[in-house]
Amino acid sequence: MNPLKIFLFLIPVLTGCASTAGDHEPVRTEDGSSVYSLTSLYDGNPESRQQAAEWLDIDARNLCLSEYTLISEESVPTFNQIGAVISSRLVWEIKCQGTGEEPPP
Image (cartoon, rainbow, N blue to C red; front, side, top):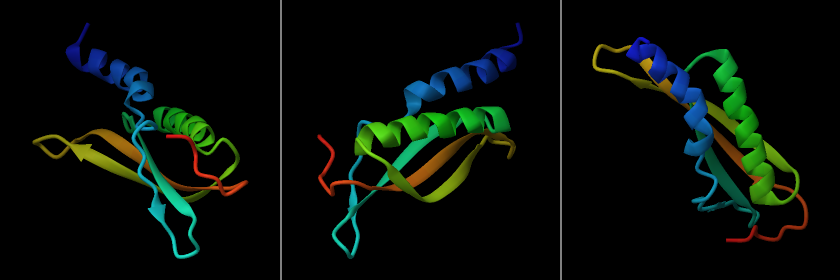
């Protein structure tokens, strides 16, 4: 099998492992609430981007232990030496709703 095909196959598989739900540092807003940044990798195609968004949704719900508000969403491409996109990061900023309590560490 072509090494590029193996690589492209592994990116969506590994994106679930690449999610950074465990190391969030909230940013305090003017009203005292917390905004969190969540990131997941994907290979750039729409199907894997959708899967990354689904994983970020799960991470956000687990982090907040309640509903959340998606404040912003950004796709950040990663380029190789010849300028081709080899993967992308999907970055969400969220604000937890609910009781106002901080999520557990």
